[in-house]
Image (spheres, rainbow, N blue to C red):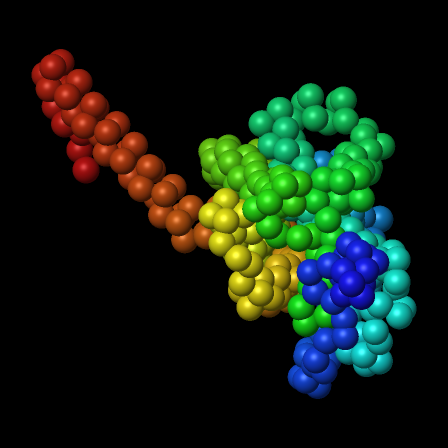
Length: 362
């Protein structure tokens, strides 16, 4: 009788895994602290770099792209700050969740933060791919009809959509639960009821964002390859396009490698009906959190100003593909020049034979 009343009084977030938990080794505390400090520092440096570059840029397309990058940096920084502070505090104090949070408010907040800051980078990557696709394939319409306020609005819309999805478990679609080893909360990955629906929503939306990024970035790269070797007054604008696409491709590759294992694992678990394997969940979750550390180094390192320090002999003033590969360009021009001269000499000799003219003296 007492056990049944205790089960009925147990809050929903503690119904599967209830505190207290076994003490966690000090290695986990050191790992979480170092991981959070490194991620926060990297994103802070990236934000300063982006802010300086944004003030110096005069290209509309580049300023649009940097607004998206700024939104991504702020999202990664806040995600590490919110979730990392809770995890590190637990490792240091080993507080009892039932005593500190008897009504599951903190657990629900952390679960919402995990979902929100997990989906935002993937959805922002898809939004950046859409913006670059329009900017490369329809540059006139992009530059004439898209003000900076619309770019900010797109970033805010991504945050709003991710926030609405994170609120679904509080409205009955899914549920947030305490997760082993007791330092974090996440939605219940299960093949039963509304938990099944929310697990699929989270995994499929993340995978769809990655697929959209891959498709549109591939089309944009093909378009750039067709025009990047051209010579003309728009060459410098194309250099900026190449630089932005390189950064966007690296962001997509990092997000795919970090998030696909976790998203596929969640989808496979709920679709197969197998019990959740917590060791694989923790492993793939750590893979996913590396995204927040690796992303800012794309903005810090993959800039022409930084690349010029590593390779100062290259012609970075006209850093197009042809200037980065001068030997290829010279060979191509010599080959076309020699071919053209030989063709003209053959035509001149043929005309002289037809008219029976003597060959010219040496």
